[in-house]
Image 1 (spheres, rainbow, N blue to C red):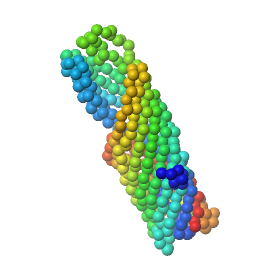
Image 2 (image 1 turned 180 degrees about the vertical axis):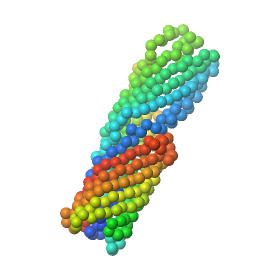
Image 3 (image 1 turned 135 degrees about the vertical axis):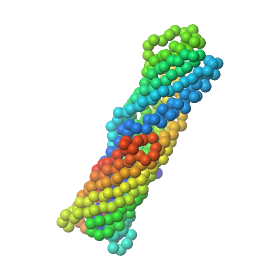
Image 4 (image 1 turned 180 degrees about the horizontal axis):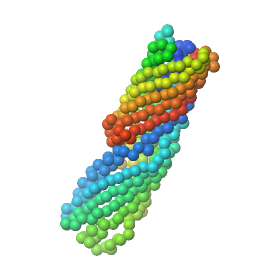
Length: 340
């Protein structure tokens, strides 16, 4: 996608606040957009599932190496993150056309493009046991990740509005969001040495380690997200004089976030470990309200300004996140409209 297209597009917050004064209008816009996606605390159960899958691989590897049955079992995985909201300064515009002569029905295509720089911090605690020759060792492992994340965001939205009268309208539309993210993290490991000490006692001749094992590495993660929404609702308008108007738009949306594809590179220099893998993050389907409250002032019959605050709430109905841990997007949208 060309830079000209990216910088010329902007999201439409929730329909047009007043009927256009001509068949066609354009609206350069700015949207200060907040996203709490990195603050959500549910869904870490999928990490435990991956750990269980890895247990089978490690059990087979160790059994082959020591030529005796070895069982690796992950009993518990707890995770938490401490992050700020992601903030996107978004720039672009909207194009509106009347679909009939009485100007009661309009279609608007809008788009937005912007970038964000945020920080990501997470902590995982893992309880693991390893059994061999009738003996079992229990270890606690702690993993920390901390580093910057850069995200590029593109929002496209197609909205239809049909005016029932001067005070009410029906609104419906489609929305597409595309995000490319890249994070580079410092990774720290701390673990007890019970399993390695057990192997030394059963199979080796080395020393017993009483201290904690600590190591550091880096991880680079790249992901791509695609989000699709359908929304429908209505709008109410309250004129103030001839050139001012306040309004509220209320819609219900159904949104599907597709499985995210990405790549990760993990390096631990001190133990000469370097690996790259493709990753897949399970998507989710959400529902919730999409609400905007705004004010419009017309300087002339063909030039006006629109200021609105929009909030969208995404309550999960499928996927790894819980219903009481919604994604919340909100922000201030400002546009200058020119009717042609």
